[in-house]
Image (tube, rainbow, N blue to C red; front, side, top):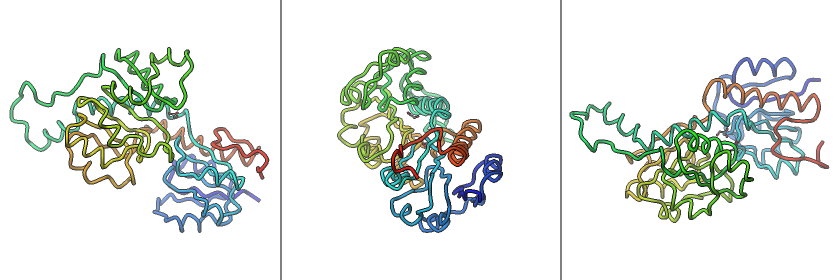
Length: 327
Ligand code: GLV
Ligand code: GLV
């Protein structure tokens, strides 16, 4: 009999159709909001699930769904997966890396520029009818070209932003990462490795690209913000929770840093109320990978992982290695 698959959010119909050609599929094209209990109930008897990043695959859920063999995430980040619990139960996890790298780097660069040049704040001013006259110091921001770009978390997307800054805008690029890049990769993006406090102190524009984990939780809090230049900007396109949003709102309001650009939030889609009232922040609703081409490629990769898994037992982009516990 056909493997049984749950597609837990609405996705591209053409990708869903490929799954329906091979599997017995329960979908959620109506995009109903499912609680953890709803998800667990729908997953009863399912062999695989396609998730989109917001659905939590917890140890409790796995215990309640012993038939589940694979969770394919349509996202590069997979902090919604309890990976150790999946591995312990022999459940394969996959993510959707690479296909979104350049699109996401484009957005990170755009958000950094919008932040540095105060595009959201000045647009709100114009729309509110407050623009009566031009003046010499109206909405002065800070330069991108020639400035120091700091990158915390130098994976594929971080390197993409570094290349844009170095080759396109003549920026000085510094970075910090758990491990240092090899010399060839450093040269390709003109990036110089520094320790975290040097990065915070020297960056004119700091961009965060860490994966979210217990270790990266509140990597940027009050103490880190205090090390930054008062003229600096902070851009987060990685995950909410990497930044302490309350501390950031305070730093923005008090002028400890100049501005922030945020595509991700602690507890999103809720946004810390203080971030909604400070003017010097650009806020976007987790759309860094959102071009049609890239979102299609991400959905296709998630589907391809499911198709490959049930055909061969292998996957394209695993997040865990099952080894001896593989079923
Ligand atoms: C989006 O946040 C992703 O992880 O792909
Ligand atoms: C994501 O692909 C990253 O490594 O930054």
